[in-house]
Length: 193
Image (cartoon, rainbow, N blue to C red; front, side, top):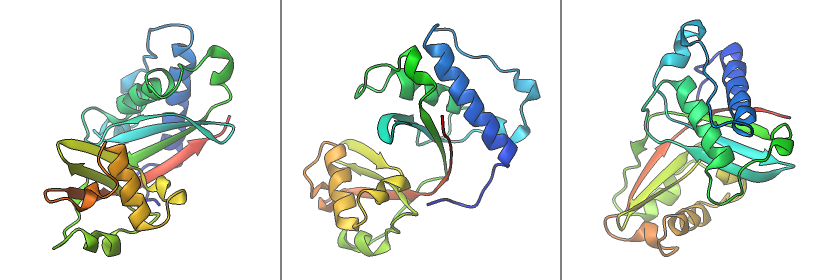
């Protein structure tokens, strides 16, 4: 499920701490955590796409991310942590008494690449369960699944059908003319409460 590590253990721990501090601060104030950027390791200043996923007692509690790098990784992690905790429309905002019970997972994405195929059915053979995240574009819509979703949908046909539904398409939307599939991998790490 992971690409080769690009971050040290210390850098990972720092990102997880920034994510948790952002969520804790967000429960009491709209002011964001402001780390001293000059004291952060250079690797955290590189623009990277990432997702922050929150779980509580094993259940999804929020997930927000970006597919393209737009800002330094430390800022992307903080913004996505805030978004996952307070802006994921599927869930009520995280309350102060539950912030410390959250599991935080950060997924840093590789650059997405088109999954070339002569026909959509070839994607079923080329997708690597547990390794590839996928971005489906079709019918003017876009959706993504992180590689972690393979744990719940291990069959490629089921994975693509669910991804199509997430994009607001029919389950066979991935087979439609003009549908495009891109894949990426993630470096994933987490913090338990």
